[in-house]
Amino acid sequence: MTPNGLGEFGRIGRFFAPLAGPGGLGLTDDAALIGCEPGRKLVVTVDAMVAGVHFLPDDPPDLVARKLLRTNLSDLAAMGAHPLHYLLASALPASLDDAWVERFAAGLAEDQRIFGVALLGGDSVSTPGPATLALTAIGDVAEGAEIRRSGAQPGDAVWVSGTIGDAGLGLAVLKGDYADLAKTHRAALTRRFQLPEPRTALGPSLAGLAHAMLDVSDGLVADLGHICEASGVSATVRAPDLPLSPAAKAAGADPAQAAVAGDDYELLFTAPPHAEAAIRRAASEAGVAVTAIGAVAAGEGARLLDARGQPIPLERPGYRHF
Image 1 (cartoon, rainbow, N blue to C red):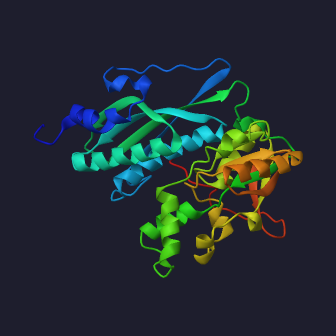
Image 2: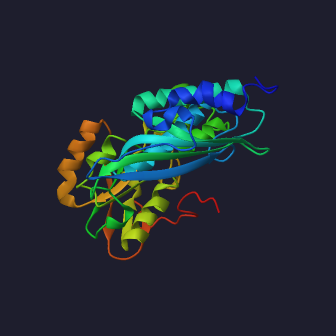
Image 3: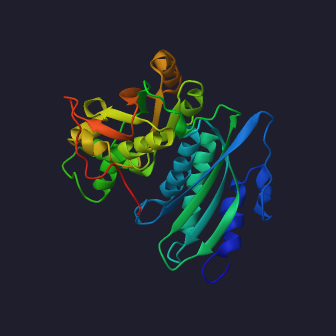
């Protein structure tokens, strides 16, 4: 052991090598080996998380790890891909010791079992700044079956999975707000912030049904705007139709605020009206609720409408880093 603990290679050998899949070669080489079955394409995504921006510095390390992995798996699901592997890069301050890293690795191990993925490799460095974590997830999809942002068409319905606005409320709870809310509701909201549920079963089942799809990370209105921009269309969302959880309703959530909150990691997609029955069957089989919340039309931009069909002014459509 080094004076400061296991050190870089000690940590890799003890905590991360047991997570490696066959292509990871025991994490003893500089790169991994992966194959792709004929007729399928690899889908690759990367997301980063920074302490104080994407998670709170005192969040449990196992939940930090699981959120990091799950946000990337959500990106795969949003393209209709099945998850396979991931790579991890971490820049950690000295204050995060071996015990923190051990709990972090335990969180990854738990979600590897749940989602059937394995570690291929990565890198670890020290930093004088906040903990910074980056994860690259790799999945696969049948050639031509991927669901992109650019396929939305006028006449499509806009759908969303699960409920919206919980993660934003959960962050507020962790910062001390909603102290009078029932303990069960506060726990439900904080869990949604700390441990999102990537829709890895629903996403692939929407191939051939959804015209366009992404996951809600920056905020529903902002992310629907990304679909509109990529597809060259406009879209409207009916605020009263947005699905809110019992905990969000108990907190008095405003649908307009829920529509611009981030970190929900629900699937937002458009599909033709005739696909409704098949979409509901797919959602039922995946065990995920889906809700039709709006419509796609010619034009540009995404708008949120009130119960009278009038646009709701929004200070911002969602979260922006810059």
